[in-house]
Amino acid sequence: MNGLNNHSYLEEIKEFAKIDCYRHKRVGKPEVVFAESKDSKEVVEIVKGYLKHVDSVLITRLKSEQIDELKKSFDEVYVNSKGRIAIVGKLKDEKIGKVAILTAGTSDIPVGEEAAVTSEFLGLEVLKFYDVGIAGLHRLIEPIKRIRDENVDVVIAIAGMEGALPSVVASLIDLPIIAVPTSVGYGVNLKGISTLFAMLQSCSSGVAVVNIDNGFGAAVFAYLIVKRIKKRLEEAKNHCKF
Image (cartoon, rainbow, N blue to C red; front, side, top):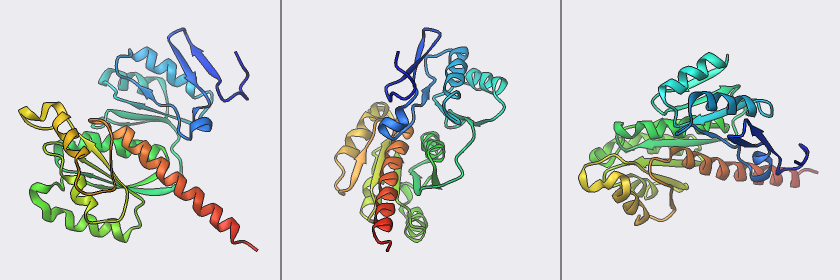
């Protein structure tokens, strides 16, 4: 096994997990613990392993018993039960940019909360606008105004049913839109597949689509966009110095 200076370094945890210790340095985003299908003790052991190398760890798709075990095992634990997500350790104080998260309905909020906590963990300031879908289109007026006024960098638009919210938002503002289809809907919704197809067929341009219920993936994508914007601005600022 190579030393810590090698960016491919892995640390094995009791023969059931291998921690990718340098993922953040290698690809610009940290490794995150996906808790689904793991037992509570495994989640705790993996988090302990990560905390040898980082100040905080994000854990997604948690069950209630896993949350209880995290609270018993660590002093600093922030839990968002609705989003089934938690942060162990210290949150970043510095914010590198701003993301707006919109959900079409109240039933889409769990995916919105997963996106929001992930964004905060990665150092983004989050504006939330929930239950602003096209069934009452006038509800979008104030969110669109605030997004424009507050210099938002990226928008995450989350919807189930026919998934029209991202297309509408993309027709009103000049920002990248990350669309998240949810598994919310009746019968032919097909657990989000119909919504996914609808978003992929967006008439408005400038919309990128992630997988069904993937608030985490949308937030990471938003972070990478904002991180690149910040890097370019810093390069331009340094270039202009005399």
